[in-house]
Length: 77
Image (tube, helix red, strand yellow):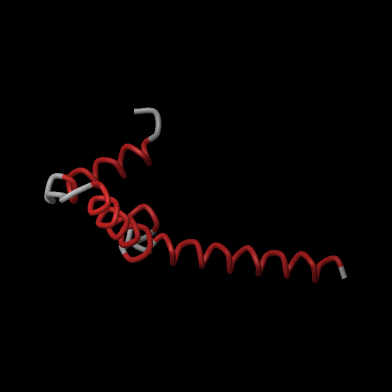
């Protein structure tokens, strides 16, 4: 209960994936969970990010920071 983000992720992983799949062995579980993690972090929109994927959110944030740096550099000239 200390970290809401982790609790939310763990709940989604358990509800959407772990309770729905049988794994043949540890390697099988690691492979399938890694695929789910990539989908969750790179392809799936999150309401907390304005319905953007985490990847889109980070790219937009990086672009915004670059524009702010450019603006600050121009202001110093």
